Length: 195
Image (cartoon, rainbow, N blue to C red; front, side, top):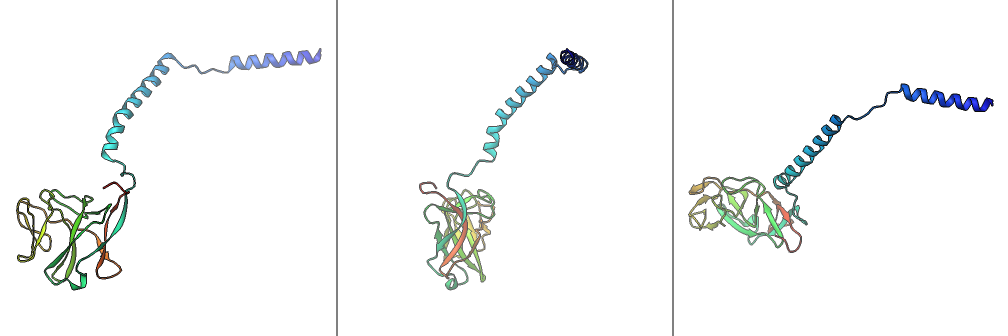
């Protein structure tokens, strides 16, 4: 019997403690507040997510930043003052513009360029005209870069000589390769089949 009274005593203490411990109930108003907050949050995320992907798109699959190896027709040490040599991006690569203006912007891609000796200074320009992006050509007689599309002309230092272009040519980041006929140009490499 003493054991039964001990058990009864324990249960009476447990019941008494439950009765004195306040239980937290969720009111209808609190539940509806949580429900509305989660509904508004889900709607906001669903509306903003596509905009964020548009503003910060992921890079295409297989694309990576790299130095692109380019072979020059005329070695750098043989370029005379006022002379330029054209080069093109190898297959599945492109060059990244360092700066821009007009139709060009820093980070845009170019698929060709010019290495120029202007006053003993070697400079690398993207082939894209700053007016509307047409490919410029070297005018060796006038020592200018000419755009065949709309007539813009640029001096060999990349500045506008004659409009309609108003911004200078974009630079490409480069460094000497293993020999004088090779340069490494900052750009991108793409997986096979993408460009």
